[in-house]
Amino acid sequence: MQHTVEKIGGTSMSDYDSVRDNIILNSELGENIYSRMFVVSAYGGVTDELLEHKKTGEPGIYALFAGSTSDSAWRLAFDKLKQKLLAINTQLFGYGTLLDQANAFITLRLESALDVLNDLQSLCQHGHFTLQDHLSTVREMLASIGEVHSAYNMVQLLNRDGINTTFVDLTAWNAPGHLSLDERIASALQGVDVHRSLPVVTGYAHSDTGLMGTFDRGYSEMTFSRLAVVSRAAEAIIHKEFHLSSADPKLVGEGNAVPIGRTNYDVADQLANIGMEAIHPKAAKGLRQFDIPLRVKNTFQPEHAGTLITKDYVSDSPCVEIVAGCKGVFALELFDQEMAGSVIEYDHAFASLVQRFKASVITKDMNANTLTYYVSANLKSIKRIASALTDQYADAEVSYRKVAIVSAFGSDMQVPGLLAKAVSALADNDISVLAMHQGMRQVDMQFVLDEADYEQAVKSLHSCLVEVLNHGEAIELAPYRMEAEVA
Image 1 (cartoon, rainbow, N blue to C red):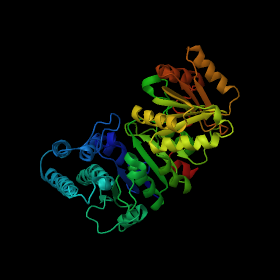
Image 2: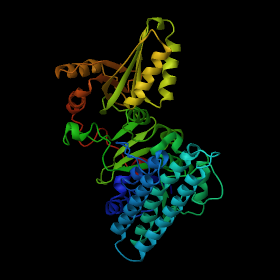
Image 3: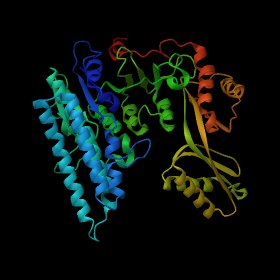
Image 4: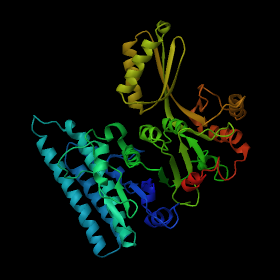
């Protein structure tokens, strides 16, 4: 019998009863709740306090430790986090032996981490040691605390509720040596019988190269992906607190947004490019290579089959599946009449600066004498890139402005007149298109707009490209794994 590997997000993890009833006890295999592995994220908000707030950038323990000139700020944050984790334990376990055990487990981890931070800070007061050289390791150590806390608790709670569960700790806490990620996973799974017990795996996994340097906060997706590959899973499943839908229901209305039943990894990559990740593209790579389907499900609607993402899927009829986008994008433009005939050299230099200042490229356009990069970054980084371009090309004109990008995605959008229809819908709502892109693969088209037009643009495009088709319950219903195998 094959098994699935399933990932539970932080918001879902914060609601244990829903996780137990809607995910653990709601198996597509019927009464057999085993033959599954679960990778769990930290409880909602915990990683923000360990590192920094993902959206606002408000510093957590790591950011305060990395940039502090005194001990007080990060120590206060550390004490605050400890109280939060203990409060979560009390909420989950009530009072009694299980609470005492859970508190003892996480307190030991916290005290060990605190000792490391104290020792490192003391060590780096000596001139031969630099704190900067150790910050990546500190970041990984702190991140691991959130996932080991939630995984340990889930094991205790499920065992309490009569479900045979195995704790799989990939954090390598006090481990004697370094292993690659795949070796770490394979070693931890030795002796685990997935058909008689539910392995609950920490979303953070320690490896010899480190995950956060590449994936940063998306490290749990890589753990999830490699666990599926190493264990040769039949299907990978991500449980979120919402459906992967045709648009944001808050923008287009709950009754107008339609869950996506089927799509492919190509579309998933395009979504990730605008920050709407179903899964990180590099995490999806292994799933694609080994032809492992990915399913995205809503924790709070377990009866829905969710979105099935596969390598080769193409919709039966060409159509737009998703309308989505992002605000806060900067259009960074370089105009130089000397560029004609040397566009490649200019493009290489421009891209190097964008990479140097760690901005994320969403798209770009060019002509004989102009290059425009549309990037996601803070204003400080944009100003630095613009300044560097001005220094390098003294006679060029460098400018930037804030814009929004709204895109339409689909596994096959080869519909004659589709682009004209989209532009017409925007024009009918007095929305000016500043730039637009459509590739020959026909899986996406992008519209660059004034930021103020973002919400209306999403509504307009969704109305004319998706809602008119009356998809019903979902855009191409996804089969359950067992139904697909029987078919």
